[in-house]
Length: 313
Ligand SMILES: Nc1ncnc2c1ncn2[C@@H]1O[C@H](COP(=O)(O)OP(=O)(O)OP(=O)(O)O)[C@@H](O)[C@H]1O
Image 1 (cartoon, rainbow, N blue to C red):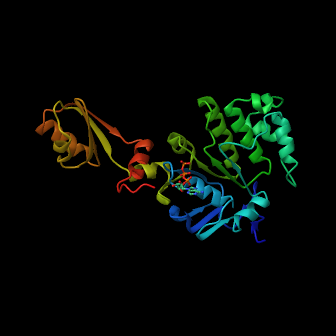
Image 2 (image 1 turned 60 degrees about the vertical axis):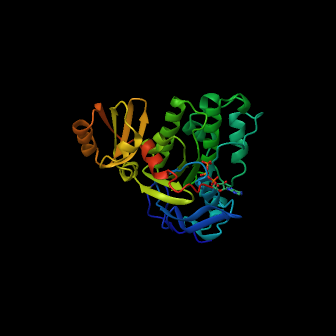
Image 3 (image 1 turned 45 degrees about the horizontal axis):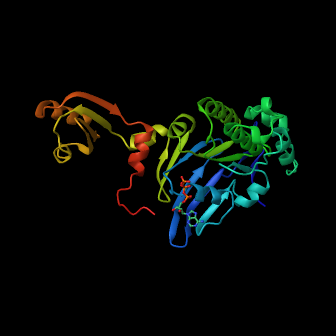
């Protein structure tokens, strides 16, 4: 086993190898190419959001990272070693969406039992504090809310004090306050050097909490950068106007328009040159009441993952 450690690091031990290294990773199930050649390098301490529409290959990639399956081609390494070895050494753990909880145990009993499976584990009281569970330590798991159960899964994943934490849709079932508290705990954690990769459908979470957003579509990375960079990739604005009787064909011919929608008397025109579109609408058409909006991360996500070729699996 060859994990290389740099012993000069301050709080959390620093590894010389990247936390995650995927090189040319592909994974097929029969004729379905779930992952089609992903290259991804994640440095220690990064918080990465893994975004993509249903069926993009996120869960397949997470299974590969956790050593639950093997790639059809390419290589997967965590801290310079094989995923299974990294998991066995407690370097990586995961918070999955469902399963894994015994309803009749209390929160604290669950953590004591889980801790007993590791050669060395953080004190249950400490992980309960970090996950915000101290108040419900004696509550039966079956009586905990969905959000509390999800925080318990987070607490369980913290027990081996992993250097890499992988979260698959971690805030499912949490209300807004619980989600905010959860992310505050994650941030505090990451500041101490823990690397975090999370898959989420809440695009605003990726925008708010990730240092880096990796957008996948049909098994390939289509964007990789800060949330601002990803949004800029889908640069452009939407011009909204009142324009009774406009037809989509007529609107599509306006110079600079790269997408349009007609909703009754309202038209929405997407463009990377909104000034030119607005000028045309005001000078050459009866359109009025113009509003111009920048695209949010949700629009960028939709634009970058839109199915242009109609061959979805
Ligand atoms: N065991 C399997 N056998 C056959 N096909 C599979 C298997 N696992 C995944 N797939 C297919 O691979 C593709 C990617 O699936 P995956 O679950 O990785 O996507 P995802 O991005 O996690 O989607 P979601 O957001 O819906 O969870 C899909 O077309 C899926 O149907």
